[in-house]
Length: 112
Length: 118
Image: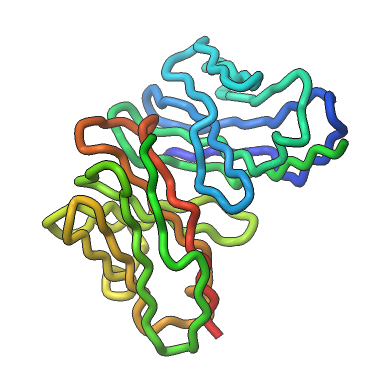
């Protein structure tokens, strides 16, 4: 079946610290992988995505690389800001499908 | 950009009553909308796929008579939790993508509706 396992939070970092949120997946076939972010009081927003092995998704300083050999899609950012405080969700979808399988979400709090 | 609005954002009801949650695509038409449910500290779980003008497709284990979905127009889908009980308390989230596009990467999510059943 399809599933996503995500690092549990909450995660608290100081501003400018390095961020890693781990995500591994189980899927049949060749899924697409996503990171979504949910800021307080808002809906989930697509942060970045990768559709095939070795692809690197990037946006707003965040990066994640689709690693088929380790079935991972870890989220990283070199220097976090207070405005990055949010809940981050790793997700996958099967090719051509619109429904997503989500991880449990990781709450990140960045303190000044 | 595409915006999905949910209403209400939170609702408290008594056990045995029914609650309706609306999901609207504000600036695009959506032939398909998705309803998710999230328990505390757990993933979002897909409940059903709402199809405009036809019956919704429910995921395994989701009671269709309990969670009534109506997608009467290209911009509105409703989820009605019938005869709600405390175990139905949860965070319900809808998502949609413009009719002309397909693929999970174009999904837009609502902010969610928190239901508390007393």
